[in-house]
Length: 219
Image 1 (cartoon, rainbow, N blue to C red):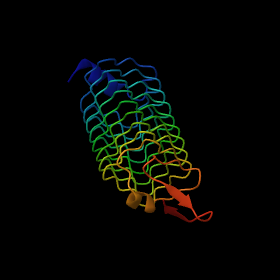
Image 2 (cartoon, rainbow, N blue to C red; image 1 turned 90 degrees about the horizontal axis):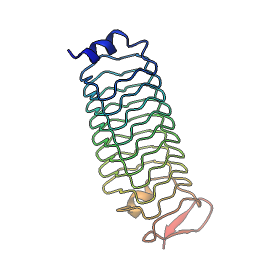
Image 3 (spheres, rainbow, N blue to C red; image 1 turned 60 degrees about the vertical axis):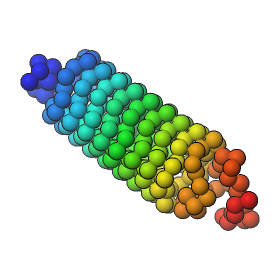
Image 4 (tube, one colour; image 1 turned 120 degrees about the vertical axis):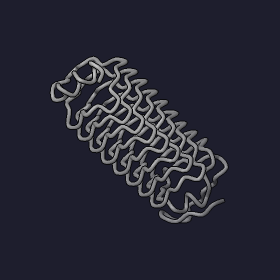
């Protein structure tokens, strides 16, 4: 066991502002730990357990979190810029205003997570389960949603410019007020399964004609 891993596990309730930059924390048990404002830049937390941990405002920039458990973790304002979160479990996590810019979340499970006001600019969200996520006012510009499930996701007022929706399942997703300009691979069939309003902005290849306050047709 690495000395960093041993220190982290033994002190997991008192890691406020701890510095684990580049640390080897693979498979570490940090469940219910307190890592508020901790620095874990470039650390390896593959298959670590952070279930119900408080990682508010922590920095995971460039960190490796492959198959990491973040179930019901508290991470408002946390930075995951450029991090690898492939096959990670973020189910029901509170990650309001977190930054996942350029992060790789391919095949991760994010069901029911609170991600309002978060940033996923150019993030890889392909093959993810995002059923019931709360993403209102999030910046998802350039994100890749290929083969993702966005069932009943709250995407109200989101920036989705340039996002890729190839084979994305969007049944009952709420796109009211969302900006979908320059979105790629978005089809009328997908839109028809979602909730939209007159404030929803679409790419030029999708012409929406409103015939009443609630009814529309494709031009």
